[in-house]
Length: 344
Image (cartoon, rainbow, N blue to C red):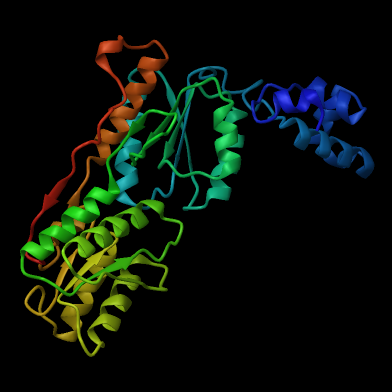
């Protein structure tokens, strides 16, 4: 890699002229490569592609478009918008930013680190004023991209030590510990944690870690199982059926999220198994349906809208839109709440 490439790689600062020079062609040809690639020969296209990769060139997608919002864009990346948890965080972000005439550019990565990296690169082409990420675990390539940015980066939904970015979130390990300790206090001893079917859901894995730590401290053997079903309701149903088929049934199931726990409650009704008398069920997230199902679901409520609102305020303060005393990223984890209902 050339010295120029090393300086510019991942920073989004290389220009079309840098690419043209390295590819030994013209800026007009580079423009044609993006807009009309069929008019560029295969040999020249390959040279341009290699130059783009070496320089870490990011095309300015904002040029010539979005004139009314150019310079007022904040990029946000979440795992999913189908989950009400993240939908409320997005609402908190969007509502707060729009009050100061900033627009939210949103994308989802479906729990894929590789997709997150591609989205970050694509977002940088729109010249955002800030980026909001979900969680504090990213691929090495994404970490390298972020490290070179000169714009605010906020991490949400997690709190991890030694991160270089402000964090708006809470400890998932602590939530796992608290639910486990609650179930123990209620007299349950054969407590099984049912993990998310999404292996790259790092925050669910942290809750499992909290469960495991607490079980060992209480002198109990932790048991972590995982359903192979993709859809959360189906995963919960399958996991419940499998656990009830064991010779020694668990007396409590702690699910990675409320949708899985709801699936288990529905399956228990179909099987004629009483909740919580025969088996207690607990979840995480306090989804809208959690208090409406029968029995109501014991769960952990987290400040999902507040996470988005505080992230937006932290950005606005760093962009000079607010006085410093009105918004700062929280140095301590945000509060969450154990919600006790009839299921456990």
